[in-house]
Length: 169
Image 1 (cartoon, rainbow, N blue to C red):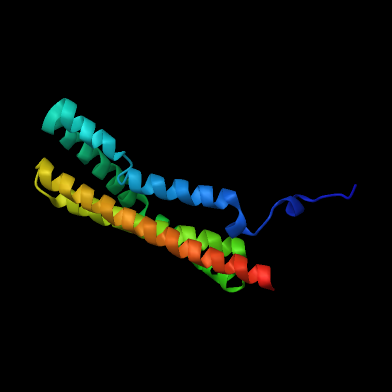
Image 2 (image 1 turned 90 degrees about the vertical axis):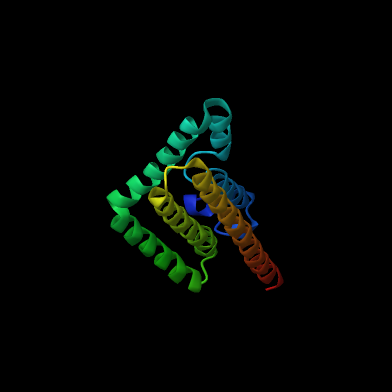
């Protein structure tokens, strides 16, 4: 029986791996399901059970959560994301399939985080009325869902191209 190293057990062909596609589906489901870190059903339940006061408190908590993280470590997060995306892009250009797969997951996630922060900043500047805040939250969720669909489509097409190219070479 030949000796197998840990690197022999790890398959770097991510686009043909079921686990990669499970991660892609889970990441984008989570990103579109809870735009400010709080699932959208909680907002609807807060309005139904507690009225406008509970819904407003929940909206403000989500906005404060996003802005609090953004204010404390904004420069660190930007530097880390820029470093990670640049490294993944460079490795992708060299042909590393795992880096390509991670880049196609990380870049849209970075864009989604920018959308969430921009929306949180707009919501913090709005009047203390629930309806405009919920309209902004629904608009954000729609943008995130559109981004998720586009990211999954681009990833699927790119991955299919990679798998077919590898199969015919």
